[in-house]
View: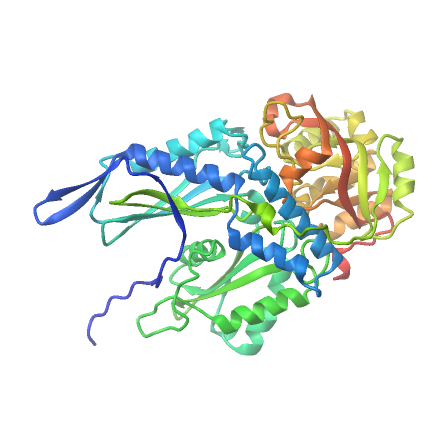
Length: 533
C-alpha cells in the first residue's frame, strides 16, 4: 500500500467575516528562498485582548438570527419565546460594553494553528495570556479561576488566569486562532462515553442519543448549539473535537468519509438528533421545542477496540470568535454590533406573571407560592440572599460545628449566583443565575435548619431536592439562564455584601430586586417540572 497523508480535519473553506485590527506588528522577511512572516509578540497580546473583549459583549449574527427564528416560529411555546426574547434583549444591553452578556465570563481558551513560516521569537502563550489578562483587568468581567495552594486549599487567582492555550503547527505563513470564553455551566455539560462497535447501528445509536440528551438538562442555558462526536483516536481527541464543533469551527468539514480517515459531518444524523432534541419537550429551559438551535454530528476514525462518543454544547452565551494574523495584518471575527435589529417590533404575547412580594415573613411567601402549580411564571420583588458553592460550604461548616443557621438564610430566599464586576454608576454587574445542581447536597440539611426554603437558580435538580421540598415545605424557582446583563440593568436595584467578604464573587450578598422573572420548578408537594418531561 502506498503512503498517503490525510489532514485529519480538512476544513474546506473559511467564510468568516473578519475586521482588521491593525497592520502593525507584522512584516515579511526573506530567509534564503523562504518568506518569513515575523510577528511582534505585542501583536499576539493585542489580538487576544481584542478577541476576549469583543466576545464578552457581542455575539455572532447567525446566533442572534436563530433566536429571532424562535420568536417567529408558530410551533414555539410561550416559554420558548419568552427565553428567546429575553436573550435578544440581553444582547442589546451587553453590546453597549458595560455589562457582559453572562456573569460567568468564563475560562479563556485559545486554540491556534501556527504556520511553519511564522516567527515570533517569544513564548506565544505568555503574550496571549497577557492580552487576556488586560481584558479581564480593564473590563467588567469576573475572575472565576481558582488555583490550588495545596490539595484542599484554593484561592481565586484574581486575574482569571491561567488560560487554556493550545498551539498546533501547520503549513504556510498564517497564524489562525479560535478564542472561547467558556463558562462553567456549559463546560460541565461535556460528556465522554466509552462505547464499542455495538453502538454503530441505527437502532442503538438513536436509543443512545435519546437517553443521553437528558444528561445535558437545562443548567447550561439552552437553546444550545449541540455537538456529538462519534469516534476519535483518543478520548482527548474526541473531546477537543466536541468543543470545536460546538463553536462552529468544523462547519465546513467534508460531508463524507474516505479511506484516509478524514473527519466529516453527518448531515442526516444532524437532522435526526435535532428532531430528538425537539421531541424531548425540554425546550428553551422551561418546556417547548427549542432545546437546541442546531446540531453538529462529527464522525472520526477510531481504534478497533474502542469507540469514544463525546457530547457537549455551546450555550446561549455563544462566546466563540476567530482571529488570524497574515502578512496583511491582524484580524478578528466581526461580531454583531446591532443586535436590536433582531428584536421584534412588539414583545411576544405572554400570560401575565404572578407578583410575589419577598419583603414578608418566610411563612407568608411560602403560603403564597403554595397556591400555584409548577410552571407558573412569577415576578419577584424585594430581598434575596445571594450565595453559591463556597458560601454554602462555609455555612455547612457552621452547622457541623453546632452553630446556628445564619438568620439571613432563614429570612430570605437564596439566589445561587456570583456577579461580574460592577460598572461605575450602576448598582450591579452582570448577575445571572448559576447552576442549581451544585448546591443539591446542601438542601436537605439546610431546610431542616430552616434555611434554603426558597431557592432561585437555573437548571434541573435531583430527586433528593424534590423530597426535601416536599418534607419541609420548600420551593425551587427557576430563573432564565443567560440574560445576566439585562437582569443587572433592569431588575437588580441594590447589592451589598453581608458575609464572607474575603470570598470575592463567592461572598454572601443581599440584593434588592424588582420584577425579577422566575418560574416555579419544584413545589412543596414534591412536584417538579423537569420530572414530568
